[in-house]
Length: 473
Image (tube, rainbow, N blue to C red; front, side, top):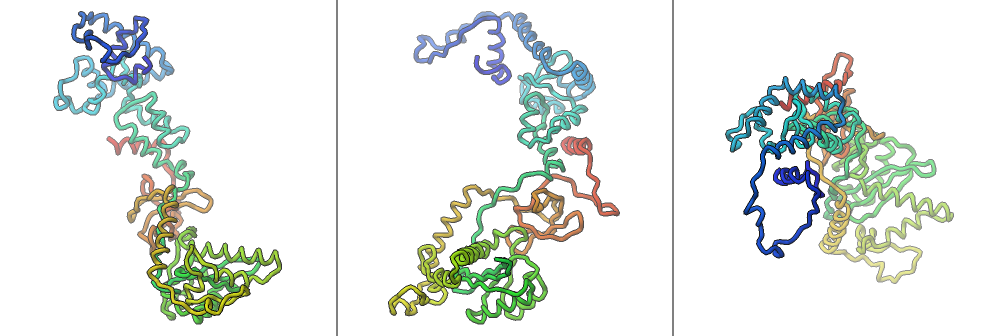
């Protein structure tokens, strides 16, 4: 028999036990090659039940005698089993026999009904196959032993199911590992979520993104149009809100005031001065989640492009504005160039062009929008291959937020943030932060209680296990 005794169904277990005394060579033969199928089962020989019971007892006793458990621990399990009311009733069911239906089974042992054919009793210890059934009084200690190495949920469950059994063990292990502060603090980062693309604007310079960067020890500001991918880059004297606002005003005077401006949460963008600027110039200001630059991805990508122009121009000792001019004249994604989409004309450059090609030509919006949507859907399809959506978080739920170092610290959700997948949280230090859902971990930890000094005293592992068992039963 290739399949071990413990993995076989009850019918095959009984047959395997009876065949243990023989040296058999079992070969499978299809039923179509047997002249009279099921001959042996249709005419069985008389069975000596006493011999069968002795053989089964021998096999079961061998499991106990060869178990890698100390005599002291076996005696402890045996004594705890004898004092356990539920397991004592289970012993009686094994000796007297199980009822014919689940409805007639006593409620105290009803949770063992589906395993009744695998349960046996040897020397005061209950077994499910080759696994020891742990009494209630020892389950706290066993859960602590299972999680000694701080393995993950699946590894801990696999380790426990290999040698132990009690109803609800897997769920209790999930709760224990899910509330272990040591494991949660060192947990891996979340898998990325499905992409949420920015909607395509209806007209040029309707929605722009802006960001700051430093190149060659000098600070620059970049602003890019979501419709045309046309971007402006300017040197600024400082990173103050006043300097940023001055440069943006100059851009708005050239191309008009956008309807929406997207930026990160840098000090110059989150200041009251910039809020007043947005109010007086009548545009909506949207900020991305802190430490999540992906939500302002177009601006981040434009910064990389601008830096590449400057690096290459500096290495070749040429004018970087010529590179910027050629970029604005180059078609993007097989569509029109940024200059054509923004100003409906090509820009005259050092490359020769016919006069007719420099004449303004209005680009149809419907054709552009359909092709841009096709590019976005293709990009989303590739990105979402390794993505997985995370469940939404409820207000007041206990969570952990990820630090830039990668560790996770406790926090409580206050409510949803101003943008999709962002939440406002309250940390143990009393800070009010905004984080993206990818940087928040939903846990099964109890709500932290702050003492007078705003410090938290973590519960011991044994106390946590006791709480889990109490909640389960």
